[in-house]
Image 1 (cartoon, rainbow, N blue to C red):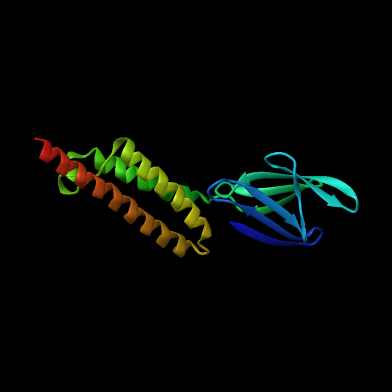
Image 2: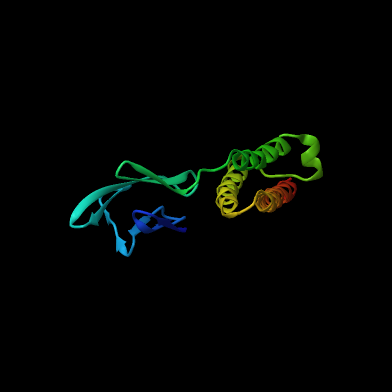
Length: 167
C-alpha cells in the first residue's frame, strides 16, 4: 500500500507498507527517512534530526507523530466493516453446527474452516478499506462472503465424499 499526502509544513509525505511483510517506508518531500527502530524514523531537516513515530498499520489505521503533531495517513477501520467481517465467520460457524443446514450444504469447520474464514476476513478488511463508498464496500463484502462460503462448502463436500468412501 502506498499513501501520498500533501502537508502544508512537511510537503509531500509518502508512506509505504507491504501487506505481506509489514515493512514500512517513509519519505518527506524527496528525502527518505532513516529507520531507527520498527516504528521510529529520523528526519533530517535543515541539518537537524527530528524524530518521526508511526503508530498503527494498514488495517488499524496509520498516524504519524512529528513535532507534537498528529498526521492521519490512513483512517481506522469503520465499525460496520468489522461487523460485516465478523458476520462472515459467524454464519459459517452457525451453519457448520446445524445438522439441518449441513444436510443441505455441508461446510467444513474446525481448523480448516477457521483458517479459511480467518484468511478471508483479513482479505475482506483489506479490500473493504480500499472501497471508496459504503455501497462499494458492501459489494466487496458480499463477494468475499460468497467466496468464503463457497470455499467452506467445497471443502465440506470433499470431507463428505471422503467420509462416505471410507465407510
